[in-house]
Length: 255
Ligand SMILES: [Fe+2]
Image 1 (tube, helix red, strand yellow):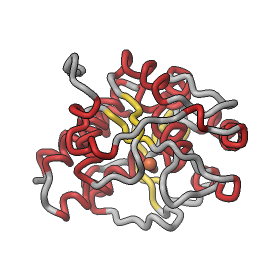
Image 2: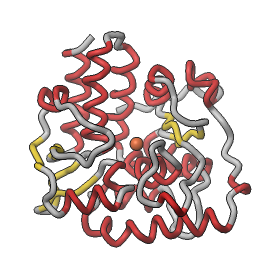
Image 3: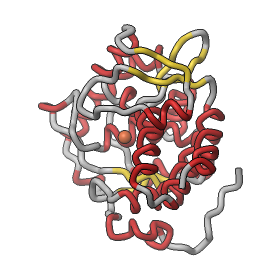
Image 4: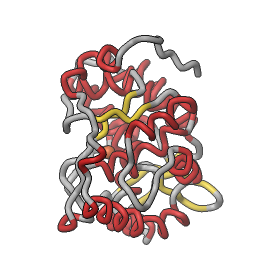
């Protein structure tokens, strides 16, 4: 579980092929309207999440210093994450090509968008924004096992060249990082960012609107999904060790 960060290596060097996509976050450019929209988004999600998010997410959001009243400063978030797991929340210009995305994950750099959705699209944005990326994803990166899993995932994918293998690994990402569930404290809790950051999707799942199956790597690798629809089938793990082991197993199965 060692964290290898070469001292003196610049962010661009660590990002490798993703270097052209790195940007700076200009936190001072956010307006009072942006902060008010953020506060509304967080305020809308927290009552449900306090009850139905897994404890690692809730602890992580405290550990990285997420606030309800203002947008996160990614430098401050990274400063809190780094000593825990070596991850950072790294500002990028938008969607990344697959090789750049995997290279960043393999370097424990989470590609993070800095723009915020408008009040007109509170529930859904086709492209990820800072609410999806930071509120939805980053708290889990404070958890040591999830942190290992996500880096392992990036490393495995970075080595794959076959399009079908990459599609299968895309399914593993979708049914864990984006829409993952975990059995905890006698119930099913959410940890996937797509559920954490979407009130509609999460409410539907909690109301029993989708079939919850036990996580199984082979089943997940073959389970197709539609990004534009509510999910009919999701997978629940018993612990995060399960997805870390699955990412290691995937390395031996694919490629
Ligand atoms: Fe996401």
